[in-house]
Image 1 (cartoon, rainbow, N blue to C red):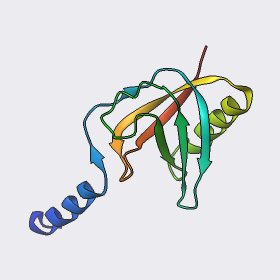
Image 2 (image 1 turned 90 degrees about the vertical axis):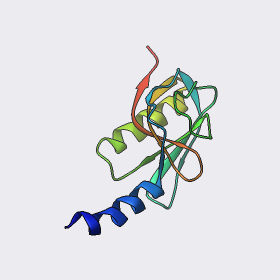
Image 3 (image 1 turned 180 degrees about the horizontal axis):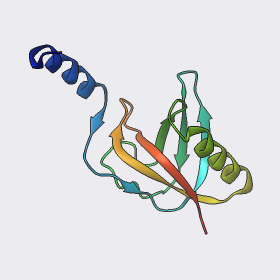
Image 4 (image 1 turned 45 degrees about the vertical axis):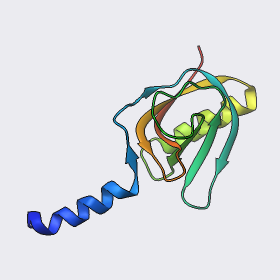
Length: 110
């Protein structure tokens, strides 16, 4: 594909998600809510998680079910919610249109 034809495609992809360049692990926090959606993703609310990104929502995160490791992340978050354990998530620096941070990993509190 020629560079002239590729530019509009790249512009469209960039417009679908905001990126702020910052990424990293949140602080540990309990899972206040874990919500699967009909849109192929799940949402997780970690109240007071100290989000390192500049996304508008400081304590809501999302993950698409289609990505590698999504099932394991969901099961870990569900187990943490059921057992009252604190978790931290790795926020990628990508924000969705609602201002939630994308995540790519999760870890239980030691």
